[in-house]
Image (cartoon, rainbow, N blue to C red; front, top):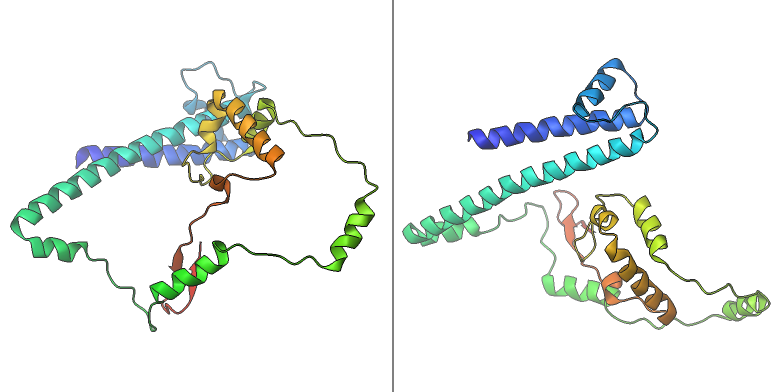
Amino acid sequence: MAWRRRIEERIAKARALIGRLISFRSGNNRPRIVRTVRMAFAGTTVSLSQPDITQKLTERIDDLKQRIAAWGKRIRRYTERSTRFNQNRLFQSDQKGLYESLERPMVSGTGPAPNQVDTVAFWRGLWSEPVNHSKGPWTEVVASQCASITPMDPVIITPDDVAEAVRRAPNWKSPGLDGLHHYWLKGFVVCHTVLARQFQEALNQKSLPSLLTTGITHLVPKDQDILYWSTI
């Protein structure tokens, strides 16, 4: 479809522009790169010689990434809607064909797939069962050696500390269970006070909330031989 091709072309051009902006930010001053950067800021008051040009480049790159995400989401929405429409129509005419199309293809390999019950029991034993660690005699030696050390002053976590930590964090690193990227935390400064309070409570109570200690284990086949699996 024409509109989809146009959006895909916009995405390709935006990605190419991001690459050149990053290259310029890294110190590449080739005439072709500089010309592209000037075109990217055409119609604005941004000058390549101003002191905060690095910040302006970062903001422009983040803006382009947001545009790419929005365009990609539009294509995904249409694809999902089209898939649902076709599946509903197929269900009315050929239910067997629909169910066959929904079946996941079997993983090809030379060995049998892992038993689900045994796999769940194995990883649950590693991650979900409490472990009682026995303290060796060396811990008492270390404790006696550290007895004369002056305790550090209590740590007070402020919203400024949160803002500084978030500022240095990568924008688009994989989010946690909340699904929130660092890019948004940098802009939603009103959240910094709440985060500072929650971190302070965890520090005072010497206990982390389950949100920070909960994970999901996925099995991924490493190669054609499905006897070998990686975990993520």
